[in-house]
Length: 121
Image 1: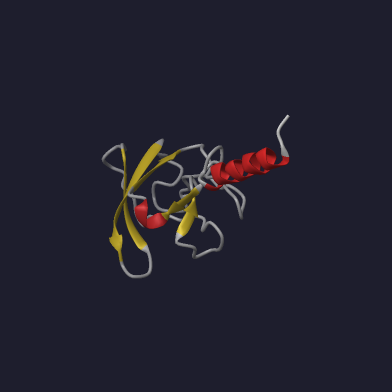
Image 2: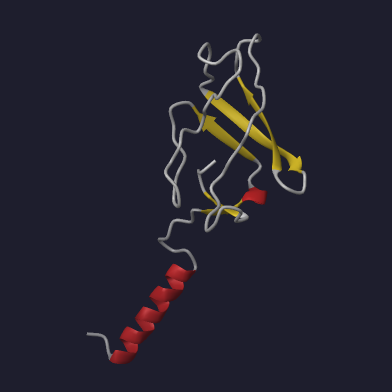
C-alpha cells in the first residue's frame, strides 16, 4: 500500500506523462507543417467543431458526373499572405483535368486557427 507521499508522487508522474502526450492522441497539426495531403473518393474528413464532410466533392464543370478520381494528392505550393496555394493531381484520363481546386481544413480551436484538426482537409 502506497503512503500518502507515494500516492502524490504517482499522481504527479501520471500528470507529467499525459502532459507530454503519453496515451493522448495528438490530433492538432500546424498547417504550415503540412506539405501534402491525400484525398480518397468515398472517405470523409475528421470533424471536431463541425461535422465530417466528403474528402472529395465535384461541384461543377463539364466532367461532373462523367468521371470521379479515386485518389487525389495535393501538394502545397506556397503562401500568398492569406491562404496556402495547393496543386492537386490525380491519375485521370487525359481528356479530364481539374478546374479550380479548393482545399479547406478545419481550424483546431476556431476557424482561422493556424493549427488544424488532423485529417480534416
